Length: 515
Ligand SMILES: Nc1ncnc2c1ncn2[C@@H]1O[C@H](COP(=O)(O)OP(=O)(O)OP(=O)(O)O)[C@@H](O)[C@H]1O
Image 1: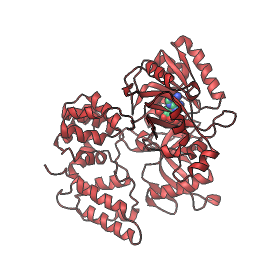
Image 2: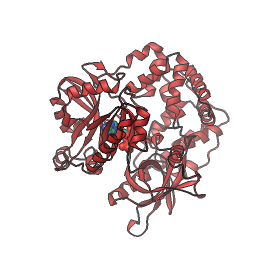
Image 3: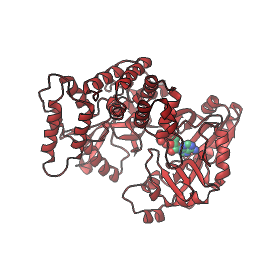
Image 4: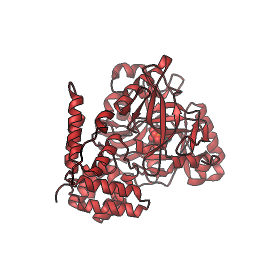
């Protein structure tokens, strides 16, 4: 069969977004996957989700909104669109504006009216379906007859839905065996949900470990004999930037293992240095030797995923931790206290208080009987942080005045909504350092879809962590609420917009405010 037509993707994408019944979404995707050639699927999935595989495409608003006569009938395939957008993303140098305009004109001219609308949404970041990956896993299972749990596990281990989809559709369910936990191949890390208090977390989980939550950088450490590799939360290889970790890995009591933990800089008194200092260690342009001397970091581990080629993912946490303790000496493990049930809640509260006194941001409460659910926000890890923050997406930014003239300053902040779009919750220009202002001005202009004298509207891609003092009703904003005293804590370039907080969870956390 020929490559998928763009029209088909646009229609399915629209239908999936419009229906609220999960089973219907799954059925729609299953049908599409059954029809797609295996090699076509890796291209199709990101377009369906409204993500451009090419990343950002710096197109000025003028170029994008220029009307082009649409084609009469659908002939464009996703592969053609993909090739053209890849070319577009690479255009640079003199005359690039004109060349971009020409390529966009060519693309839009081959598209029907509906396809033009879809392409426009894709390029501006308006069609984005946050939950699509999770539904696509079930769609793939339905299309191929493989158990959904097995497909999910393979995706975790491969770190890529597209890779698994191609193998599964090409070679059938047997292909899933290829995706095993392997030292040297990173897997998506397990993530946590939030709980309002330690007692709430303990009540939910029963027998659990309460661990300190360190505000550093998540790392997955792989050692195979003399070879050590370190991966971030987003699976980037940062081995060369953290030589201390290779040294530490070589001192552990094993030869082949995968560990999960956090890396953080402590001061001489053993208190954590600021997050910015730790984060500075993995910046792309830092001189590693100088940085390692100025801000040495230490690994602090909390889980073991594989030891001596034994896959531990499905073992209960209590058993994985026993393996960790065998391998890693106590000073290199997070502090923890064990709790058998609600009667020990007091002891858990005390542990949180002591952890905060030591300068850490909170605790993570973990069920002792739970497996490691790679790549997911498992209900068996609950984080408790007294200073509540939100991960929001920058939708636009206003040009600053006075000392901030020439800098993009006042940010428009959005939370995710059920249909995958973003609802503006408010604005803030507080909490930004000069370095942040310079950085965000450059970064936001790269994401610009429309610029005016007053503000710049951007593709909703940049996630920013925001502290706030509460919610209040507001008729000015679409969700009916706005944030009180919002201020920027930091940018979260390690998070995708699909991971931002939703209006729904925000409202659930503030039952006192009714929009
Ligand atoms: N003991 C610990 N166990 C698990 N994660 C820990 C621990 N200490 C620190 N962390 C960090 O906390 C994060 C867990 O929270 P979550 O999964 O929600 O990620 P996050 O969204 O990056 O969280 P946050 O923004 O609160 O740091 C981990 O990604 C890890 O970086």
